[in-house]
Image 1 (cartoon, helix red, strand yellow):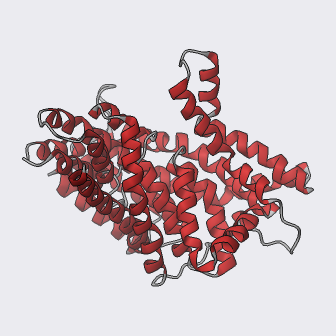
Image 2 (spheres, rainbow, N blue to C red):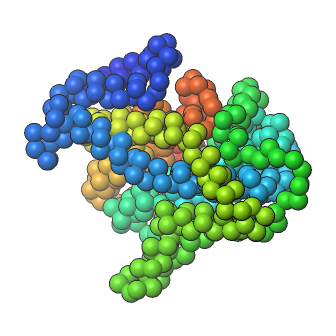
Image 3 (tube, helix red, strand yellow):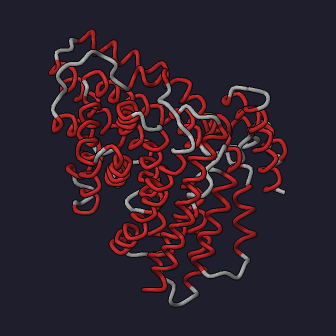
Amino acid sequence: MGIAIVIAAIIVLLLLITAAKMHPFVALILVSVGVGLMMGMPLVAPSPETPGIIDSIKAGLGNTLGFLAIVLALGTMLGKMMAESGGAERIAKTLIDRFGQKRVHWAMMVVAFLVGIPVFFQVGFVLLIPLVFTIAMETGISLVTIGIPLVAGLSVVHGLVPPHPAAMAAVGIFKADVGKTILYSIIVGLPTAIIAGPLYGKWIGSRMYKKVPSEIAEQLVQHKEARELPGFGNTLFTVLLPVILMLIASVANVTLDQKSEAAKVLRFIGDPIVALLIATVYSFFSLGYARGFNRDNVLKFANDCLGPVANILLVIGAGGAFNKVLLDSGIGEQIAEAAKHSHLSPLLLGWGIAALIRVATGSATVSMMTAAGLVAPIAATMPGTNVELLVLATGAGSLILSHVNDSGFWMIKEYFGMTVKETLMTWTAMETIISVVAFIFVLLLNVVL
């Protein structure tokens, strides 16, 4: 019953957006209400433990934007400073010179994989998207060819590599060794990112030429007359400052007493929001005042760049509301319970349950956590199960088939200026390639080990 409702909801949503030309924000909220009604959710909460439809919508939208609104706003300001100062152009020119125009998409995958290790997917995305836009405009290459390697590198690390939250939680649930899990995740993750990123990106980019969306390009790409560009080292340090701060916090979590003041301070400055805030303020000086801009210029840049982000935030928030209604309606639990009684190997079971919940609910984190909780007791009764590879199999399953119930789907769609169909052909296909290829590598590694 639950799966049929999800399928019907997705079909209705696609028809509202494509055929009826309804704004995605309105369509997502309408479909969220419809799913809640079909699943028998109460209109309003009868008790704090039982959320109503409207409560789920408000909670989903609020929880999604509570983090993302701050990240996208600060990241866009940082991107604007990189654009106006010529910093993004400096990094783009350096990468093109070092790797060559024909191999620059490989550079984007490597950069994303490294940057993505200590940061959340969304943070890495807003940090690096000005670079993607600048390279696409400098070279004339399709935005898809440059952009897919970026999101592939970030997505692989997000789903497979600790210390990302879901992967780290799965390590705890399965009682896996963190060091081994990180080692295996890199062995599995790098070839997966190569296949789903530069290789698939080049293939689909040659069939789908996309220019940088003009409205966002005005904010994140420099259109000014030729002038001296900032130094590569200064620009690179500015954009990597939040990554460095988060990395320091990750090291502090492992090496310091968590009750000490030093650990608390480092955890605070390494929080994604605080790290981005510090980097953004630093960019006002390193790429603003140091480049000859005055306070009025910097204030204008910060004001101007936020307008185009408003529509993106609304659509992402509505995607979060749809996701929350699917979770609160119990659809994920129905699928997990049905899969639990199948007689499959723990690796296949972990991947399969995570994949089903991901497709139904849209949340990679929820699907990985739920699958880990269900599979852990089963795996404990089966001697010889490699729990580190079980973490990776579950993480791979949680990335499959990102579509209209995933807020990440709408973020990629809006930033890349694509239609729903184009986003399904690029982002959704790439996520599915990552999931399947990573699982195949996990099985091969399991044979070797």
